[in-house]
Amino acid sequence: MKFGMAALAAIMTVTPALAETTANPFAADRAVLNLRGLDLATVGGQQRLAIRMDQAAGAVCGEGMSTIHLALGAQAQACRADVLADIRSRIATATNAGTGATAR
Image (cartoon, rainbow, N blue to C red; front, side):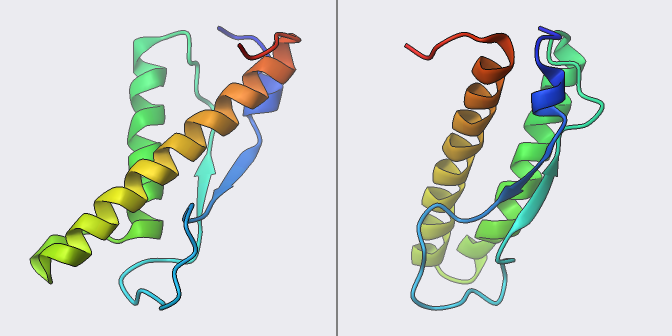
C-alpha cells in the first residue's frame, strides 16, 4: 500500500462537515491532519492514522461535550462521525488518484 504516498503525503485540512450557526467555544474551526511519515501498509501506520484522525475530529467537534450537556455530547458525536467519514473519503479519493484506480 505504498502506492501514491505522494498524494497522501499532503497535509489535509479538516473542517466540520456540517456548518453550525453558532460558534462552539470548545472546538476549533479547523484542524490539520498531517499524513507524512505514515505507511498504511503496516498495522502501526494504520493505528497512527486512526489516532491522528481521532485527534483532528476532536479538535473540530469538541472534547468532553457530554459533560456540559447531553445534547451537546450528541452533537459532538454526530460531528465526529461526519468528520471521520469525510477524512476517509478524502483519503480514498487521494489513494485512487495516486494509483489510477476508480472508486466503485
